[in-house]
Image (cartoon, rainbow, N blue to C red; front, top):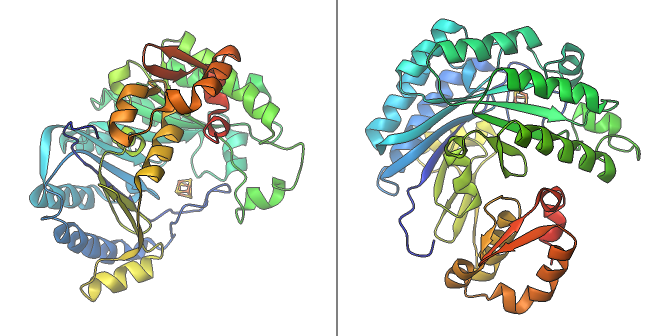
Length: 377
Ligand code: SF4
């Protein structure tokens, strides 16, 4: 916003998982026999946006489990995307991968195809924790995949970890972090285990008052995680994300956080452009039906007013280390935050939750820990 050119990002959702993890409520299905039908529909969806979106500088293959696709399927998909759109030469091209899926040759082939960033769903380096989470890989597979990705030539490797499992001691979490650091990944995402309704883990622990997810426990894990990773040189650039160095922060995900346009393809994928947000049907069946009948598989959409965009920018800005440039914010959204919220900001400064650096309001580590609450002005 504010006048500078923002190149959109492209997200492609691969809605298949061999097995369902116990904490996950993302849309995915186990019937991989539908992958070919799905790719046929996805290619039609890609082509139908070729005039509306012309160029991208990030591609993100997420899911679900993109690493369930064969190398040939991934190559065809990237080829189809490159044929329909101008993919800028410096683009960040990411694939999410399950550690059980890819060997050294697969990783080398992906790198040769131009995939230059891999995000590996490690979640934990402890086998009993992985079993609890219902992951289909073990810690040895995770370590092998990390090592193989580096040997394959990836110089931008990310891994995901989950903390605050029921009964998990902070020492065990620190051990997982130490194992992650030993690989020197450029990017680490650390997510608190969320007890989502309707998932096996959510059903089992969701009602317990002393279980994972209590405020005090969340804060302890959050603060310790940030301290350990920042001591190791990582930049805590968003509440769940760390990069070393900063230019290895996920360029694609940052588009979601600063109102850069993005196109999401596949079931349940969301898109955003100008003030419009729209999202596809969640069900693969509905998605396939619409594309077969020549319609875009859009489930619903909304037009955001300037007030809503301003609120989102505030909410998202407080979750990021770069914070909110108050002058730029006023130029973009027409709201002088200092004038309206200056007293509150001073209170947050006194409480050590934010810093005011020139015209930038920046959350501290303690502020990031409570960022969602701060945004509820
Ligand atoms: S692999 Fe990812 S998307 Fe699939 S069930 Fe597990 S957490 Fe959910």
